[in-house]
Image (cartoon, rainbow, N blue to C red; front, top):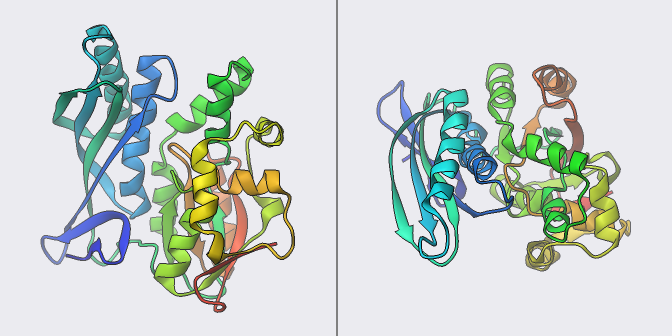
Length: 308
């Protein structure tokens, strides 16, 4: 076992030989959009993300779905699975099976198996003091989904949000593997601050987040100021309160965005300062046009997040 549960990472990694290791992960989410095919595509991209975050290449997938068959037509399940298969085909991943469970709430996700060279695994435990941090996708999807459920999201903003959640992290992962980075994780349910906390803890460093440089989808800040914030945001804030230094008094609406739970969010990449601009340029060229340098790694105080 190269990467297991102590310390935990985005996926497990098991060495098969000196040249080959398996990357294994599983993820399951509730329906965040009304269109079932879109939900399937987003859920598939979300499930694949953990393998990319480890520097791996996903190879096979198995569906996991809980479905309220007594209240929902089976055609909905067919459309969800069809949308997911579209995204797997885009990623070059083979669907090998799956499992369904009758349940009162619709949930869908995947078990993903990938491969990686044992000496090229990228974890969240190797960030180095002096590194710069690159975020590849803007934040705010959790807040925007909340606004969508309230019927307040503009159609163009909804389309932008969906395009972002459907977009794979494969190209950004290819860049970080080919150019050599120190650490990485993907930003999902714990928000940027929560996942940065994991990197800081595992790497025994401090992380400074340049709050004003963090990209987010424009309307997210407006909705946060109106109180349209998912419950998970408040849970994230509470859980990591002791690790966060907000002595600079960053605006509370921006704090909400930094803690916003993401679905199929971007990668947070820790890379040596002298490589950071080149890595960022390559990532933006590959399609993540809003990627930005959003912080740096400090040696002390250990396991702390400093907001500036």
